[in-house]
Image 1 (tube, rainbow, N blue to C red):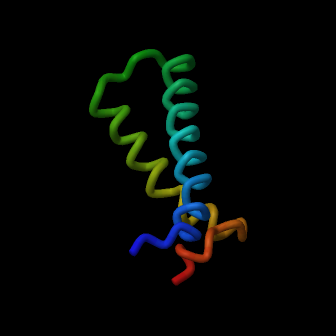
Image 2 (cartoon, rainbow, N blue to C red):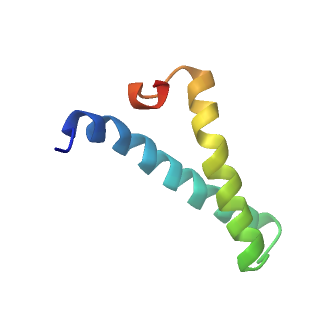
Image 3 (cartoon, rainbow, N blue to C red):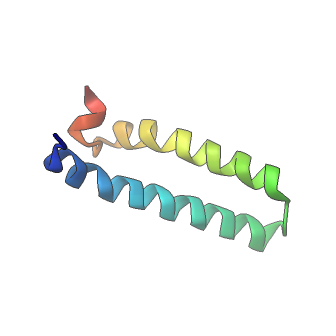
Length: 67
């Protein structure tokens, strides 16, 4: 069965991560210009990988990520 409380806890973080990815790509495109698909994909991977440790360090990580 799906744990709806866990999903409700995680959804805001995934939305924030998606917004951070779009913001980062936007800022890179504005400052540097179009870098191409592979560079932008690397930026997405770095932002997505850095989000969870950053949120944990700030102390706002959901309980599901603490297990």
